Amino acid sequence: MKKIPENIDNIFCQRMKNAGIIYGLQQEYRKWLRFYLDFCDKYYLAPPARESLAQFIKKLNEKGQAPDNQKQAVQSVNVYLDIISRESEEPLAGIVKETTPVISGSDDGKKNSDWSTIFKNLNDSIRLRNYSKKTFRAYAGWIDRFAAFIRHKSPKDIIIEDVKLFLTDLAVKRNVAATTQNQAFNALLFLFRHVLGRPDDFDVKSGVVRAKSKKYIPVVLSRDEIDQIISKLRQPYSLIVKLLYGCGLRLFEALNLRMQCLDFSENIVTVHDGKGQKDRTLPLPMIILPELQAHIEQLKILHQSDLEENYLGVFMPNSIGRKYPTQARDFSWQWLFPAKALTLVPDEGDYRRYHLHETHVQKAIRSAVQRCQLTKRATAHTFRHSFASHLLQANYDIRTIQKMLGHTDVRTTMIYTNTVRSRTVQEQKSPLDF
Image: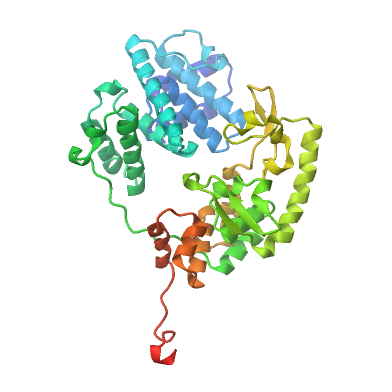
């Protein structure tokens, strides 16, 4: 973990003493500051920059940190920013004030303004092409790190050499995986082509190369290992895992399921807006139907309770909520795996319900795998890998598996041929014996 500069640390500790904070709590504040500095170093963020704190708090929220911890982290960083900005001589300013000080300097302000325009245009370009929010977050993250790497110089002054140096730094200094390098490559390619409007600067002749990805063989669990993990999970996590394996769903696809996605008359589930904004239908595993219907009966009780509390309804996709405001309270739009608590919407001043957060499912699966003491590293996506491999072992056609997984290119599905062991000599037969 990154150390706090000695001169800053001394002033930081003195301010906490002046504020009457006990020694044990002082160490907690120092811990959050070290986390913040480490975060800025990892993601190429300049610690004094206004956006660095927002990104840090976003990461804490994604990690599931409690609100009290996040508040403590904000206070720690604000004290640090107040020290380095030298804008306040009041010892308690950082503890009381929870807004980040503005970094003085007209040049910095102009640079931040230029880059704010870049991110706005990026968002517009992503939405115009109907890409997912995850794509925007990924691309924005890499462009933000690239901007910090080139010290936020004006976007119009960016040259292709800056891109080469950034990608080289990722590979050599940061030692990131080839897939990570290629994600950064794609983000910067999108920046040049669709945001800066300079596609000719980022072509084959530019000399920017993609990292060569190694051959990937996914982890596959046996049926016995899957049953072991499910036995260690409680509801609703066990039912989620059964859908991940039984239907080959991605985690976000399972969590985005609503009541209307289930058709018990045909025993199928429809996945809406999967990866690449594609829809597909899949057969529901017959063995989980009683459990699934019992789960829905519990959700009806929860929904009735929400209606009695006069809540606004669930979060709706795109503009459907504006077109049909009453539909958010309809049972057909309710989440199959709702969050345990309602979410306050500040703009509306009322509560809505979101689906279960993916980090909760990931944590539950990780705990179950550890208790099973498996030798394999299993995650939520491992059940999707196992779904495809087991179908291949059962002699399903590769094109059928491709359709069920929702892959655009069959070459993506072909990676599962590496997980299926070929028949032994004893199992092989001569055509004469057919």
